[in-house]
Length: 171
Image 1: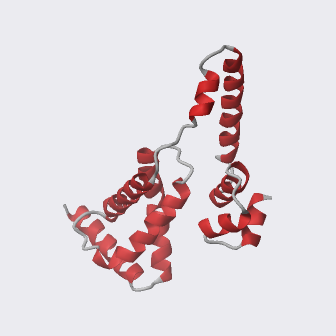
Image 2: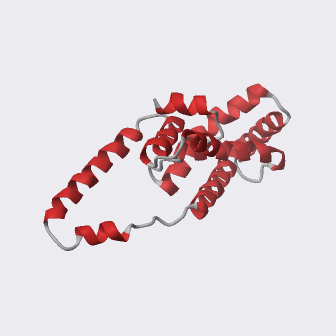
Image 3: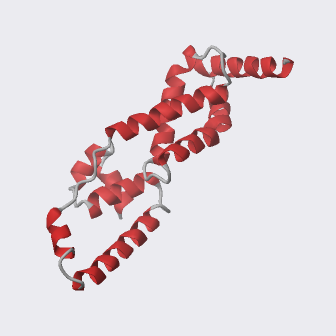
């Protein structure tokens, strides 16, 4: 029982120091909790393209709320709770995917389009597999500019960065 109480006291002390602006404590907290937060989000959302951004969002919320951490649970459990809320907010903000009915009608009537559809799906799978290997900011900028065809100025607004930063990420 003494170990649990000591661990919670250490958690509380770390949280208080980090909330007070101690950069060393903030780094320590981040490094101690990043795998747990990432794992929690991954389990909820799967291999989501937004996963790294959601980890960052979770830590923003964790650092904002540190003053409210009372030590009733472990710091890890508390951080996982915040990560879960972040995942929920992400899911609730998503729009259902839209389907272009014209493209569905093209595929349904004949077998000639089936081969083309398979090729398109395979190309899309390869593209997204490649996108999964690049940095999240670069991936988002590329997807918005190249795949969606949005103007660079719009991509800059959506990603809250400059047009120069977007160009660097895309090319």
